[in-house]
Image 1 (spheres, rainbow, N blue to C red):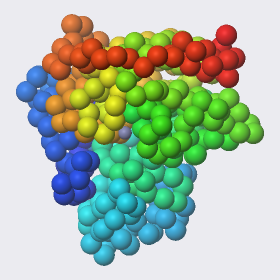
Image 2 (image 1 turned 30 degrees about the horizontal axis):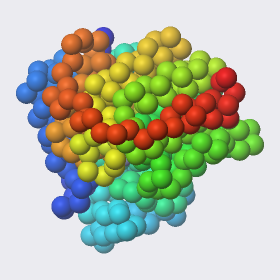
Image 3 (image 1 turned 60 degrees about the vertical axis):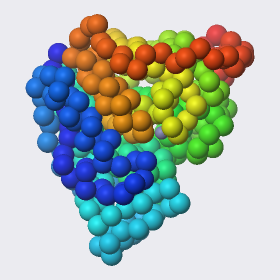
Image 4 (image 1 turned 135 degrees about the horizontal axis):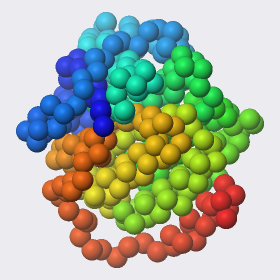
Amino acid sequence: MKAGLVYDPIYLEHDTGDHVENSRRLVEAMSHLKETGIREKLISLPARPASLEELKMVHAPEYISYVKNKAEKGGGWLDPDTVMSPKSYEAALCAAGGVLAAVLAVMKKEVDNAFALVRPPGHHATHDRAMGFCIFNNVAIAARFALSKFNLKRVLVADFDVHHGNGTQDAFYADPEVLYFSTHQFPHYPGTGWMDETGTGAGEGTTVNFPMTAGWGDEEYLRAFNEVLVPVARRFRPQIILVSAGFDAHWADQLAMMKVSITGFIQMTRILKELAAELCQGRLVFTLEGGYNLRVVAASIKATFDVLLGNSGIDDPLGKASLARKPEGFDEHIEAIKRIHRLS
Ligand SMILES: [Zn+2]
């Protein structure tokens, strides 16, 4: 398999100081890819800045100019969680454009699949607002790009970041051409993503939320994938699968309370890859969202590339979560979600 890697040093210049979402996440991930010998097996895909027209497929022109002006004035806080530096506008343009480069390479079959290691992340950013460390909604812009540039009719966005991708959900809530599937801790930031949020109008049914109770882990995530994502994807028949990959559902992540292991992420990634092979000629593009434990992020990114390359016997250096009493009620919970989406 030919797996593409999007990375650009500009991503390090989105300088957030000692913020939990900082450049060390990518520095450590890149050196881990190198040390483990994976880096040389990947095809480098150059990032480029997204154009204004591309950003406007998702964002308000006034909001884009606001971010640009703020960078020119030296940066500062865009919302209580989201800070920017003088280079953040440029980095954010290249984060969005990096995912577009990955989509282009996959669509043109230059690579079989790709992972864009970008920052700032994107899935919380809305039409006119930065939120939750996100400036522009990279994956939403990529979905719009796939639809318009390649005349696609059906894009699946799967989001396993531990937080709900409220910005992505908003962008496609009334849109039948993009199926948004998300697993996320609930209740948790940003507060959206209950199972009864299913889309509106022509987009009714193409938003599929799988809220997770704090303390659930691999077993519950895999059932959510196998019993909900797989059948809704088969019904929808996507022409490409985009993945908002956050590794903050890991048991060692400091921002959330889920119990997923790297082995769990590997299994979820395998399911996504098999779905892409079955439904859309293998077209699969990952983009980095959250994940704040540096060891977890580096090892998970490496493991994701192992899956994309088709490697077996992939290492999980952190192991499984220690056995704690697991919250009950999963069976009733998944049945309720299946009923809402007419899967049972
Ligand atoms: Zn997150």
